[in-house]
Image 1 (spheres, rainbow, N blue to C red):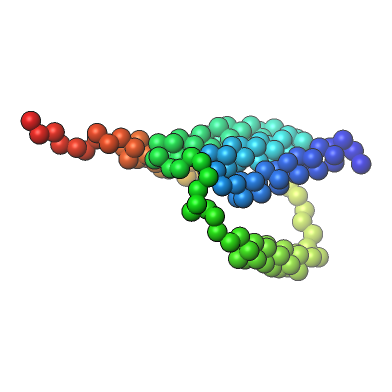
Image 2: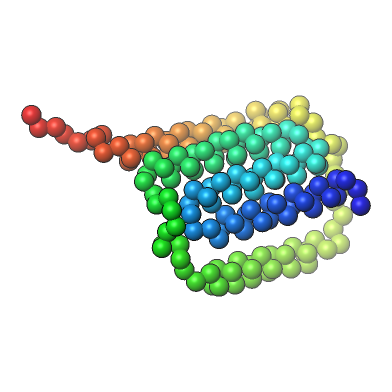
Length: 169
């Protein structure tokens, strides 16, 4: 075993454990913070796999922007911060459905691609990735940024009781 193998195993365990804590905790804010840990571990996996650009995009977009937006939305909409009785349900149906779906998809993919040989193209570079992003995927990225901005503005408007109230006077 190499050092990279040990790091991949450790970061995978951290990502898996914190991902389980995201879905099992009863505190919404703690779930968001465990999501930060899970996404950070995945960024660490990208670093070990020498995909530095993808790792920093993971950190900037997911850990930096999406999780902050999630936490702001939770705080601005006055969602319950502590333990929530709404989340106290039987977990076995979800575990059975999720585990069964995951196992079924794994069996399907292994059966479908068992003897397929994939010839990898030349290694990707930051230049090729940038060209693909800015030629092919510019419009979807811009639309997602506008959607996230609209969600943040909507959360602020919903949280302020004085907006939209007519004053009599």
